[in-house]
Length: 211
Image (cartoon, rainbow, N blue to C red):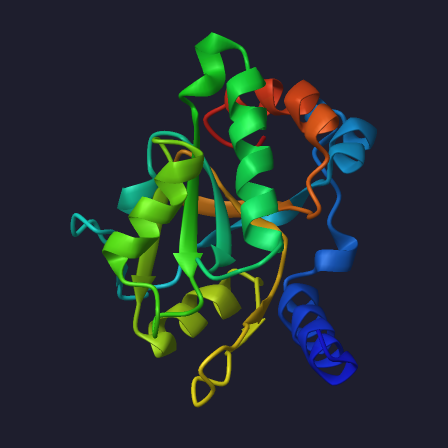
């Protein structure tokens, strides 16, 4: 990634995450502040409503609170041509989910939203994510709608130069954390800390919301 693009992505992240009090976020004591921090789980001071963005899955399910209700979900903004962050994160998420206790495993979902709608159709997205885990879900839409969702969730990206035959997209490796009420309640920092997440996620997944 060129230095200038890295700097731009970093500035975007500071603006978007900082606006929501990112640097002042403290995990809820009831869940174990130090342990959550070590696992890379960052909770927002207040739950955040999801943006009204026209995104959808291959089978026509729309992005929004109703889609995410009923279980916890980790949301990654990425793309199928990603050479590193996406395949690594999805492989780690597959292992993390498989290692969770059976009684909470189905309480965790994973959704990946494409940042490359030029090449990622809904069908391609779903085929890509299910390669890693059949329960994972892919979403995409028009670039403007993707940017609306990513900005509102504090997970910025820099669109690729689609005039080139081979182009990359600079995007965040952090994940959005959605609660069973369909609200964003935090982030999980990337690169993922597998062992710590496997240890700390069960307590969170047993809750219906963050206290």
